[in-house]
Length: 109
Length: 109
Image (cartoon, rainbow over all chains, first blue to last red; front, side, top):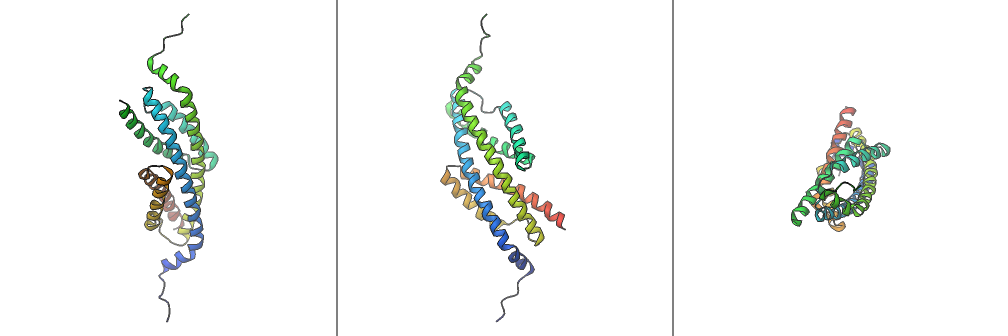
């Protein structure tokens, strides 16, 4: 008996498959590293948040954020990452951090 | 001559300063690592995008994304990261990747 005829999309997927699988495995390894580094980063920003709440400092620090953004844009260019994406990424992470800081500040009051 | 009187916020900032500086230095180191890993991740997803465009595969792959999300949520729990944030982070990165893939697909047509 003949195997069922493959649709063109299936054949294309099968041809691309071994290379795609290898690339995705490496992406998954990087994602695991990213998650673990982000976990450590949030531990540090939680300590920053506690310190700020204890000393009555504001949760957000625009001057610090400007310096971080400038630095990450430079590091992005050096490493071959789109600097616009690096800036969006930092803004995304900082928004989450400030949300945590505000919650800590509210808890300290 | 007396030094100018410090406002309370300045005094609080000064008291918190050495610990804050040390924490921020570690955050900056982690951010540099994150940017470099993200640069490598985008190189890999660019290869995935090229492969998909060559084989006429769709840019988005909801089943793959579901598996990635489930895995990253588990890794987040293991590493002490908020799994909701891990999921938001993956969605943020994948949205950028799909934007790149669509641009590559459009270029291949």
